[in-house]
Length: 418
Ligand SMILES: *Cc1c(COP(=O)(O)O)cnc(C)c1O
Image 1: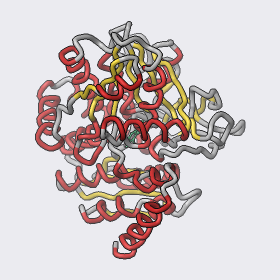
Image 2 (image 1 turned 135 degrees about the vertical axis):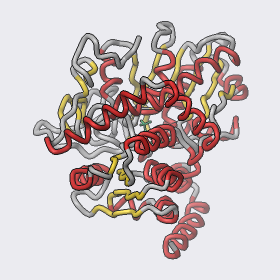
Image 3 (image 1 turned 180 degrees about the vertical axis):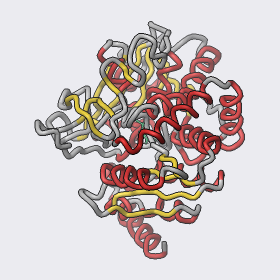
């Protein structure tokens, strides 16, 4: 099943979701991107080049690890994880960013811009720009700049200009708007490196394609290490790129259940969470270049959201996943901040692994379900990133006052130097 052959429908649509909702002035640059992407996708040499780059620069293929201790402790299904945390820069984001970098080179452009919330995508883009020799500018809400000083420090030292956006709520949404403004002005030499499988066509398809490297590897690795395909696979869903990346490897395996884990925050109730589908608080709308489900009020104004994980705290969601959810191919669940803390504790203690807060949403749901399954069952979790970046938040969530104070002093010293 190819999610992206648009033979029976409109190009860039998944059911009624997706599309290209952009100001007229950007049409020529989107057409240029689409054409270059189509050529690359049809050229086996391009995928070879991408794989070689990811091998030599980011350590791919990332392994699959059997969590024997945790599986035994729960007494249910055998738990495996796909180790995207072992990538350079610590998460799956680099897959998409390096892929887009190769396309930028093909288009002959010399400058890249990107939006970032928590800073992970900005960090990955700054890395890519340094490696390829592109000029780069990262837009980040002023509040996020203050909260994420270490990421800003590294981005600047890798040669990116970081712009603190002071419009609106001074967070991710405002950074995206500023990025689009820059793109309109500079599209002749500039590419907008979008960070997740959202936005106008071809971004959802393009980002999904680069991230499909996760699922392609994982399917083979499960067959060789577990001797069978997993019964269920789990991924956290912010914009949806690591989830669609893993799920694509198992689309045709009808017996493999696909589970997307959203940020349940404080629990159900508008404003308490960032769950678009599981809690049914979102509705269909058009924003940020696409038609999909958004957390919005009746006037179409976006709601405030909450999650302990900055990377899942997003108002919209990948249109392909929405379509697969409506077709009952993907199940969506919401995981609360409290469940996330518990999952982190047990994973750190039993396996010596530190999942990112985003990733821990998938761990929490998998742990909950694995316990009820039989010892012959197998589940696979996408470990989208490592938790080192979350040290302040995790210390906070664990109520570790001593370390909290120590870490805060260090952070303050770091930021006044930086
Ligand atoms: C950004 C991020 C996410 C959320 O983004 P998706 O596009 O939904 O994958 C999840 N995990 C980690 C570690 C991230 O950095």
